[in-house]
Structures are given as structure tokens and as C-alpha cells.
Image (cartoon, rainbow, N blue to C red):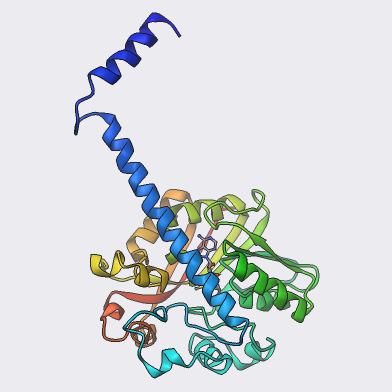
Length: 308
Ligand SMILES: C[S@@+](CC[C@H](N)C(=O)[O-])C[C@H]1O[C@@H](n2cnc3c(N)ncnc32)[C@H](O)[C@@H]1O
């Protein structure tokens, strides 16, 4: 290092002005990052617990509060059975015929829509499911893309991955695989995917813009994104957006429709559409009864395309 370099290092240490120079700003971004890390850990812990509980036949709404939450007193949230999961999935838009394809326990009732209804999958396509959970949408996608197609489920929770792989053994679907990974940094090569699907997951990410950037990276030219997720139709008050139970329950972290549109534009997606399902508010109301969260969030179908 030359003399000027040494001078710079010396002056930057000794002329530091608290509250004005760059060090506090860096600390602030470190704090922001550790907050995001804590959120991700809480989400992983929550879904690991759900996956482990499901080994004994229990199921749980993605969005129901945790067992120890005082709000979790409704009879409906206590009845966590495969039958209840099926009932929820029917309400979320799955047909009886789709649910009949799934052995007991594969449908965990964790979705907030049915991405298959908008994915328009074709034989031989490669599909990636962001946050695949127990694998429900991967198995339904595999039916549609056929034996020459390929479906990859990505999930960051090892217990959920074990559950999905056990389900794959039950289903006997050689064209489905599950990879451990974060949807912000997909374990998938650039430009190799025809369709990205996801069901009630992106709202859980503390870095949603990065999720869409990485989806764009892995999509082929002309590839499409077809997602069901919870979105905010008004700014969510802090009492909800900073509440861990609300975030892990797929409500507190939802992005606004405007924010989603601006990310799609900035990243370069085209033909973006966000269709809010107003009727979903009645279902969301049951996820945290009495809180009023359903006035701020709703389930939506989210569609966009990477240009040719
Ligand atoms: C609400 S569940 C939905 C599961 C599945 N899509 C379904 O409909 O049944 C959310 C899933 O996303 C996973 N997940 C959440 N955030 C993630 C992230 N940042 N990266 C990868 N997986 C994530 C969780 O581990 C969990 O399995």
C-alpha cells in the first residue's frame, strides 16, 4: 500500500464522527441482516416442527398460529387431521380429482391457493416449486409434465425435505426430486427452467425481491412464473408486520401488490398480473381469529413471464 493509502486508513479511523460517518450505517445494515436471519430461522423452526408433527398424522395450516399462541383457541385450529387438510385444500382451489391422486399425508394443508390451476403445464416441461413443503404441488405437476418432464422441489427445512422424499417414495415418481436450498439462492443452473411455481412461501422470505431475481435467473427465455401467495392489499400495521407468529403464519411478511409490480418491472419480467382473491379473506380471518389481519392481506394468483 502506498503513502496515500496509509494516510486514508489513519484519517478514516481518527476523524470518525459518530452519527455522521459510514461505520454506523454499516452497523445498521448488519442489524438489518441479523433481523432477516432471525426471521428465516424462526420460519425454518416453525416448518420443521410442522413436518415432524405430521409424521404422526397431524397436519397444520400454514397460517394458523403456533400451539403456544393464546389466539390458537378455535376448535378448527385444534383439529389438525388429514381430513381437515383435504377440506382446506378443497377450499383453496384443488379439485377432488387432484386430491384423489395423493396418498394420505401428502397434502399437509399448507397452501393458500392452487398454482396448478394457473400453471398451464405441458408435457416435457421442467418445473421448479419454491418452498415445496411435503411436495403436494410437485407431485401434481409431475402428472402434467409426464415422464419426460422434470420437477424439482426446493425447500430450506431439512425435516420438510425428508417428509417430501418419503412421500416421493410412496408416490413412485422418478421425475420428481427435492433439493435442500433457499429460494433466494436456488440450487439450480441459469436458464434451465420452463415454469416456476410456488404456494404460500414467498411471503415468508425476508428478501422477496431476491427470490424473484433468482427465479428470473433460472428461467429459460419465455419461461413463466405461476404462484399462489398471500399479498398485502394495504400497508400492514407494524403490530402485525413485526410479529413473528404473523410472519411465520404467512400473513405479517406479505408484500404489497404495488411492491410486487415494481419488482417485476425492475427485474425485467413482462405480462405481470396479480389477481387478488377477495373471497380468501374469509379463510384468512380464521388463521388468526379476531386480529383483523384479513383487512390487510388476501391470497392472490401471481403471474409473470421472462421475455423471449
Ligand atoms: C407454508 S409452507 C408451504 C409448503 C408447500 N408449498 C405447500 O403448499 O404445501 C412453506 C414452506 O416453505 C419453506 N420455506 C420458507 N421460506 C423458505 C426459503 N426462504 N427458502 C426455502 N424454503 C422456504 C418452508 O420450509 C415450508 O416448507
